[in-house]
Length: 332
Length: 63
Image 1 (cartoon, rainbow over the protein chains, first blue to last red):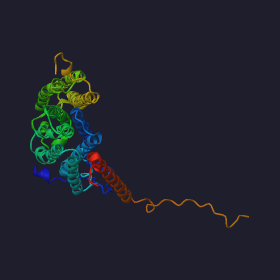
Image 2 (cartoon, rainbow over the protein chains, first blue to last red; image 1 turned 45 degrees about the vertical axis):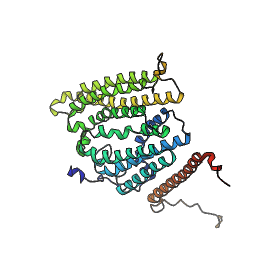
Image 3 (cartoon, rainbow over the protein chains, first blue to last red; image 1 turned 30 degrees about the vertical axis):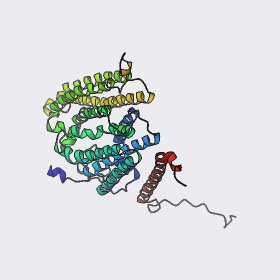
Image 4 (cartoon, rainbow over the protein chains, first blue to last red; image 1 turned 90 degrees about the vertical axis):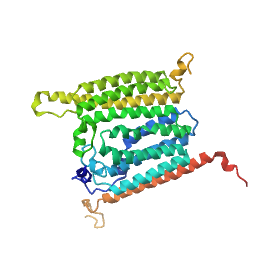
């Protein structure tokens, strides 16, 4: 750990090229931002509470900026790790285009700005939840969990799961059970999603000293845990249909996609994804690649599945379609 | 006879490194423009949010 902490913060090919505005945008992790905007907006719409469209847009903007601020703080603190991983070494701080102090300043300023603006323009419950989310991601996950435990992304997943709750709070001023159900869906989705990724990029994590599950517990244990988490995750995805949140289309999408999810997770468990290639097994190297393909399939489908179920909820709430409980004779 | 006053065909001077715009200057200009646009957008947003939050109450005051 000490070696890792004292690791270089810039790559050997770091350049003195000046920072462009695009580099500052990259500091905000726009891809993560887009997912957060999507789930946050879903929570806001599903609340079905009267909120002025401009204030709704401001709430989503604040969630996006808050997520971006967390990303900047993460890139500041993790520059040493990022510099050692192929996937992240091109980021602005490890590549030397932006100084760590600048990333830190940007993260702090945008955090304060997003929380204050959310509080003043929308409501303070949403602002408080946003502040907690930023704190949880930047401090609890980035500074503590990520370098300390193999459960880092399980617990840290809460930060990524809270945006729909913030969106709901922004619209309704309260966070009922259904809001937390959306949070639970993303929370339980995270382990299978990230461990599938880690199975075929564990060398990078190992090199950087990040205790991801495949590095600490081994690939076989990780594959087994992916399947167990998937068994828990899919039923939770069906719950919104029975709590007055999702309709019949939602139930169909969640059930069908859930079945595919379980099949893919089963295939990962049966594969050799993440096993290191043994030079004595030249003839079986194809099996290793095939295993990595199973992990990639699950990783890709997990994104599609989460997008589909949230999009279905979003469309149903926007169009005012009846919930599944409304369709049951004598239902709510 | 050619007119000595007529403009001569002059080969275009080669662009030297010194003539090219400094990438640091270009990057700084881009950052400044992005920052300015961001600040303007923020100011407009604050104005609009104020109008929406206050609504008709703007006119509800003793004159």
